[in-house]
Image 1 (cartoon, rainbow over the protein chains, first blue to last red):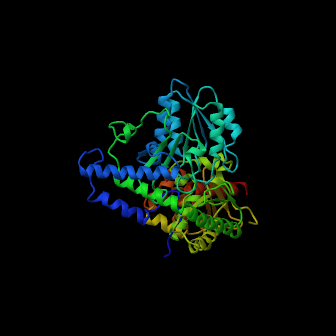
Image 2: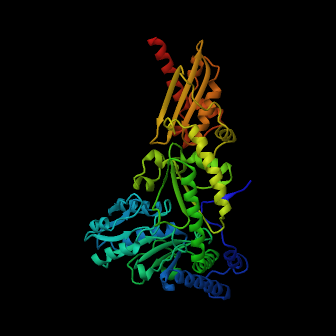
Image 3: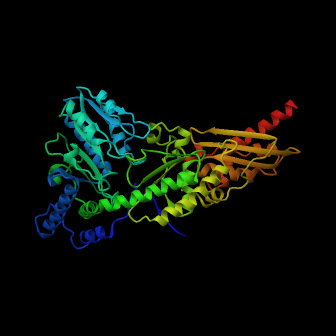
Length: 390
Length: 124
């Protein structure tokens, strides 16, 4: 059976060239970068080479990159680290309703510690409005955390404009962006957009799982989150994940080199998929912004059907995708992102996210466009929600 | 996550559809929480002569609806009333714990359909 993987926003496979660079650090290059003998020095040099590559991708200095165990830790580091370091300056944090749980749950924890958190709404396409941010700022605000691009619906936020609004009011307010879905996929220059902190992850860009980084602009007032050693210039304790860091470095380098080409390929496939679904299936709704969206993101709601049963049927046909249905999250609530966009709960339950990657082809898109309409028709034939005449 | 039996009923659901002028119809669930099950009954001599379902919901919701219809087809109404959501889950070889409450409502829909039928008999 033909198998089609279209869940690249969940994770990607390691690029062959990334694997080649990682392998020696899983085999003979076994050193701990903190050791002074040759093995240790070689490992240290490999980590520093990776740091420079990640910095180049972002337009940052190498010393501003701190490696973490992934995007979630980078987000936790940003929120807890800034809140704890700036507690005396104020107790107000601003974020949005559509953040990843790595940010949202950290914000909720900080509320329990006495911080006040504003969760900004978004418009129907998932965009944060500058005026909402402006109105939310107070003299007590110490941190603003707004994602660069949304993981579910792919909407790209106007981060540069939002940073300007914050910094014009008070340059001391720290701006963090969770850019896990955007780094290496669309151009990001941290100097140009002016953020203080930025989270990224390796496994979304054909690097390995279990490694990420936090960009910390020089001079940003933040405390370490993981403690227990002097690694990463005391910013992040714990023996470095050398093979992972090496892999992230190579993945970042390749993403920089191939970005334009990859984005063109993904955008072409994305449009074919979006137009094909709209043409072949009635009663669908494209979730997210029509143009300000990640090149590989397609997110539709199919009325009268439920997302998990869509996913299971797609899986039976060899297609991997994801959904904002409650049944796929282990909770009873449908996606908080779709609800924030104003999608009614019953329509949010019927959402399907297909996220494209570098190895997807036009044939993959055609396969999905053959299988998906049949599945939706089958589920609708079983659905008590379908009105007469549909 | 799902047993083979659940996947079999999900992929090849039995007794899907509607019964025109059904003797009893029962529906449970609501679209907000993501599961709705509707059961149609044809009753003859106090027995379920035919049963059909329509379900909006996850894999467990569809599989439990299908399993239920197989379990009670041909049974007397009292026998059918003795079938519980738990009976249906056990017949499927179990369900993931998170699905036991939200998506295991087929027997409730059946009981509602039987009540609907009996209510109509009384009023006749």
